[in-house]
Structure formats: C-alpha cells, structure tokens
Length: 216
Image (cartoon, rainbow, N blue to C red; front, top):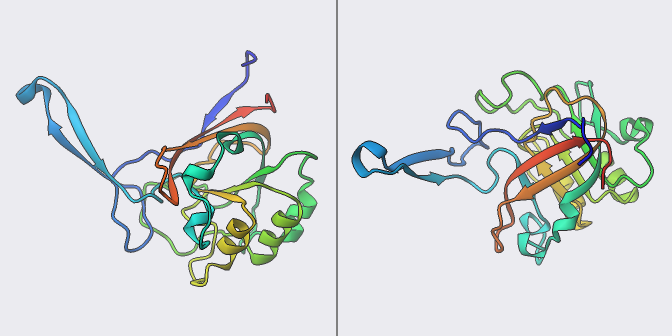
C-alpha cells in the first residue's frame, strides 16, 4: 500500500453494550478458562449473525438467493464513495443524483446523523436515518453492487415488508449495515469488508476498513 494513506476501521466493536435489533440476543463473551485457574485464557462468544457491522446477502430476504458461500471475495474489495447526508428524513434518489458518484465506482457508503458519539454504546433507537425506496431503485439503475449505512438496518424500522432490502438484494446488491463512519470524511476510498466465513449463512459480522484513495 502506498505510504501516507490513512486507514479507517469502520467496524463497530463487538461488546455487551452494542445495541441489537429488538428481540435479538445481545453479544456475549463468556470466559471458559482463566490463567489463574487453568494456565490459559479461553473464551466463547455468542451473537446474532446481524450483530454490529455485518453483511446482508440475497439469502437474507430472497428465496433461493445467494448466501455467503456464493459471494466472491472480489465483491467485497474495491473503490467506495462515502457520502454525507445531513437530512432528517430518508436518503432519497435526488440526494444520490446530486452527489455525483465517480464514474466506475460501484460501492457507496452513506454517513448520516446516525454517526453520533454514542451510536454503538446506547439502547436501540427506532428513529434512525434509512434509505427510501426511490433510493434503492436508483442504486439498481446505476449498477451499484454494494451499499452501506451507519446503523443496524438500511430500512426504516416501520417498514415491516422490507421493500428496500428486497429491491436491493433482489438485484444482487450487497448490503453493509452497522458501519461506524464517525470521523470519516466524504470522498473516495478503497473498501475492504470481510465477513466471517460461514458458508450457509445469509449474513455475518464483518470487519470493514477504508483506505484513503482508490488503490485497487
């Protein structure tokens, strides 16, 4: 990697205080052995596959859709454009059109008011910025292959039909949710987003980083 490129870790730390979707089990870490008693530290973790920063694959909502076993690793590395949305409502197609995403950039990450100081150290909130349906259709029309947002769902809490998810995943657009974009300026980066290798799963916790500039 070229020298001087800043690297941003945009993954939410997995910890007990991490908010989760209502009804989902919280992350937990249990010590099985300790140095004092066993001469070694060894722990076990338990978490939902959509805990913290995580990837949604088509299998999450699409019958017969691809799971993690069907996603080439190349899909998860490449040029990504970070946009800052400061509106109070949903992200809409007009905002994306005016953002002038660089030609050839097929991955978009959206930073919004969700990216607050205590975003991942507080209770779950239903009042988060999400994507509107027109935004989802715009992403499909523009050939975007991955979109990410800075809270636990790309869809509004009061949309039980999950139309945004279905529009995106039905068009094979991967979804990164739960990104920590605090301190990340808008601009062009190289994204590396590697989910846990759980072949049968519809999604998985993901370690994601951004490297300044397009280096791929």
